[in-house]
Length: 566
Ligand code: ATP
Ligand code: MG
View 1 (spheres, protein in one colour):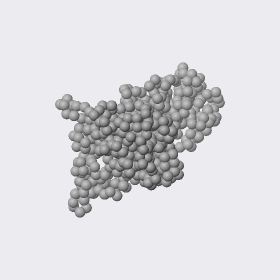
View 2: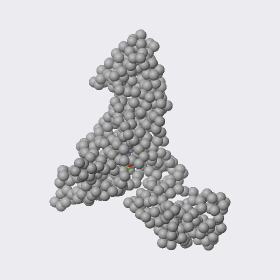
View 3: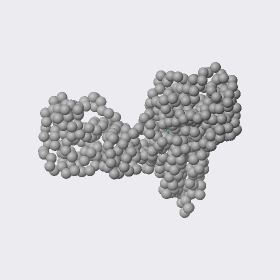
């Protein structure tokens, strides 16, 4: 039986005002309600109530990982750099890695994720196909020197992650481990009460093939995803791919040059010619590993540099600067057209399909050209879907207009394949007596981020509003103030605790009932039980934090009601 948590002895200080630097709801409320405290940018201390919530999330994650046969381990966060050099990630991660040296000058890093180290552990421990499959997991502190640590614990530079890794001898085994994780994640997020979507993702620096993200829709999210109202298609916007559908361009007239003085932007051009932006072809110049490349997209669309970067990785994509035009008379800034680009590599969005006809730059200052036809007047070197997805873009599955929403990435599952096994020569002896290369999956859940995501999804104007399984207590008993009321509050608290409930009681002396009620709403325990006006008769008021519904109950009725909710 857990101790009743008396607020008079709890280290808590609630704040009436939002912290000055807080932009997101979870940041404001978790600080104001005394769950977390900022120690440095992106580095957070978890206070007593916050630690309880974090523990509850951890417990759910642990139970469901154990249920799929995961074995919990704990690997270090302080790591030698050699394995990450072997995989190439020591460089690939760039500024995201925290790097440090020991007293002898040997180099280390603080682990951002642990594929390399798990591969080495399994290489040490498993030598035969009989030792596999295994699923290993840890719930551990990760370090990433994020460029924009923001939104409180949603994006920390130090944060808690559950990371697991599966090791199999066959591709079917990997798919099975992946499906087990997928199902476990669904159960975890359902138990946490997190509204979530599973979307196909790009795998980024991890490499590997199949990969899905678990996204929690919330305005504070930094990910955007699309969702089809008609079929089950859902994807990270960076993973949406539209395919080029050629059209018949034979009716287009010959290329015609147009006088268009002072029209270096699509807006000025469209206004000057009285056409819509979608009739024009915009050619963005970028540098890919230092080489100038043109990217063609319809004039009404924006290039998504993230998507472009993902497509071209590991090459580095940068925007061009004025200096890049020096000594390049072939590149007329603001008037570039693909028909005169010579050897410059030309990437185009699939919407610039063969046969489509465009108004675009004429590669001369102040001039544009019309009837410039893809495949006739210029060749597209490579089609890549690189535009920012817009609401109503056609679903790649069924063509219905897509919805676009913001979300928080709370989990990510990857079928890595043999990338790391190849790097570390991870083989086991197979059934036929020959070595077999192992295949891997890696799977993450942002445990501390899940707390923030839950806060974002469940809070209201009054404050936090936790689902019961995650809340720091099942019931928050409030003693309005008088001695008699405090006595009743403490008595009912003991009874509730004896019945197996987690109880917090506001027995603080010298704090007004108004402040206590406001704090109870802010702290967000799902049931609030008040010993108030009718305490002398032994009657309490039970309030549901979410719905605001109230009812008056005797002590025994309150105990029965609260335990029945299980
Ligand atoms: P993001 O795109 O948000 O930076 P990521 O794709 O780099 O995340 P993964 O490498 O997939 O993250 O890590 C697994 C999980 O860890 C993520 O799904 C997310 O829930 C969590 N996570 C990642 N970075 C952070 C962070 N800086 N703070 C808190 N949680 C994080
Ligand atoms: Mg991810």
